[in-house]
Each structure stands twice: as C-alpha cells, then as structure tokens.
Image (cartoon, rainbow, N blue to C red; front, side, top):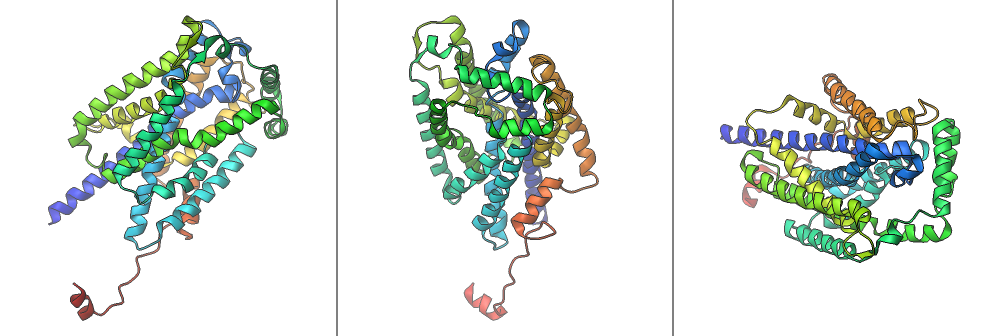
Length: 418
C-alpha cells in the first residue's frame, strides 16, 4: 500500500514539474515575440519597412513570424486551461466551490491586466485571459470527448476562414495613411518621450480610423473563438492525464511533436513567404495566422514534454520549472524591464536596435530570469504576484484554501451509510 502511494506522489510531482517547465519555456518564446512590439509597437511590428528593416534583419523578422510569433502565447493559453481544471479538482477535494474561487481569480486577472495595459504596455494578455476564463467555466464539468469535439470544430471553422482567397496585391499594399501616421508618431513618442507622454499616447491616441475601428471591433469579438481551442485542449489534457506519466508517453509525444511542428511551420511559412513569390488571388493565405500558430504551439508542447521522457534530466529543465512557478511575476517583470530598455524614459532603443540585436537583448533578460528564479524560490515559496492572486482566490491571508469540512455524522451513522 505504501509503495502505491509513493508511486502516486512521484507521478504527481513529475506532472507538476513538466507543467511548470512548460510555463517557463513558453515565457522564452513570449518575450521573443513581444520584443517586436516592445521595439516597434503593436502596429509597427508588422510594418518593418517603416523602420528601415531590410536584408538579414528582414529575413530574421520573417523567421520570428514563422517560428515564434503566434505560437508561444497559445502555449500559455493551453496551460491556463490545464491549470483551471487542476485547481477545480483541488477545490472539489476540499469540498469547496470551484466556480466561485475561479471567478474571483479571473476578476483579479482582469484587474491586473487593465493596470498592466494602462500604466505599462499595450500588449497585455491578462485581461483577455481573465475574461476568457468566465467563458471556460461553461466547459469546466464537460467530458474530455466534449472538449475535443469543440476544439476540433473551432479549428475547422478557423481553417475554413483561412482558406478564403486573398488578393495578394491588396494584402501587400501599403497600410493606410492613418496607420502609417500612428506608427510614425509612436516611433517618436516611444523612442524619446517621458513616461507620462508615452502613457498618454498609449491610452488616448487613435490607433485606427473610424472605418478600421469597426473592422477591429469585429476581430476583437471573434478573438476568443480563435484562441479557445488551446484553452479547451489544455482542459482536456488535464482531465485525460496527458502529462501524468511522461515515461509511458514517449512515442505519443514524439509522433505528435513531429506532425504538429511540421504542419504548423508549413502553414505559417506559406502565409509569411507566399506574398513575396506569388501574385494574384491565392487561397489559404490566412491559414498561417488562424491555424498554423495553434498547430505549431501543440508541436512545441509535445516536443518539450518529450524531454521529460529521457532517463537523464537536463539541469536547464529545473530552471524552466522555476521560471514557470513564477510565471505571472516573470511575465510582468519582462514588461517592466523591456519597456525600460526600449522606451524613451529608459535607454530609448525603440526602433533602433534592430530585430536580431533586439532578440539578443530580450533573450539576455530571459536568461537572467532563468538564473534568478531558482535562487528566489530557495527563499520564498511563491512569487509576489502569485501570492496576491492566491490570497484573493482563497480569501485567506495565508494564500491557502481552507481545510475540508469536518464530517459531523456519528460513527455508527457512517457505518450504516456505507
């Protein structure tokens, strides 16, 4: 009996290590993708010519859009869905109400996200994740098969939309005069402005014209549908125990990683490179953005999980795990550090460092997090932002769920019930 309990503990520990590692790994890709926004703005990242990006730097820009951009944030979404189910199971085991606790958690995420977007950076994802969490509550008690069906259905819809023919001449045409004007203003303000000037520009400057705003509103309304499959697949993985015992899943991880990485890279490469080599109207150009990023993210997830099936664990994995345990704190710190590096109130490298050098800079920032996170966890059990989130979720200053309710029935009554 003791041996069985020890085996269960080992499996649970291994699973937690893998999940924490995945979170930490995803933050490496997230900071690399976000570098384009930190340095060129949320609109400027897709307009390299306006910043004089060409040659090798332009090639590296294309590489990032194929291999990184849009393929690491979905990993975070996957782990978000996974975490929802695991937290729900933990609360149910303590005879607590999962949806009530999760709702409080989502509300605080929205609050943190709004502060993040207002005072630091326009690329925040926490507000979106918190709002999406309320939608995911509808699927909390659904069976894994139901989650899979909905995921496949939504991915099919995305694929169908991505197959709509696109006029390459129109898609490669220069952006609107309003967009170009906004990007040029942002280059000046973000590159040399004070903190207050940048915050005022971010919160009040008109990013889109009235016509463009209507189109963007439709896109925002449909955004949850585009990312929902990864949330749902993460929830399904938690219910199915996909990562409970990595050693027995070696072949499955390897097969899925190979298939999804290949499909994702092909679709994304086609969407990024096709406009440079073809003319006229071409179907499937949207598959890279709508479907390729999700498939590539799944491939990365299984490829990373494959590392945990090796007999000898890499010491670097433990550093990834430490970063993952502090994922929310590290995500916000990335914003604080990188905006200070690229914005005018810091080093003022906005639009000046170049794509490759910018990547080196942010990867150096992540390397510091890889080094410091394990050191931090030797002294503290959780990160400061994670601690606040736990306190609010459980309404406890200790950040711990209350103990299960005591069974008040008499011993003989329990015997009769059994």
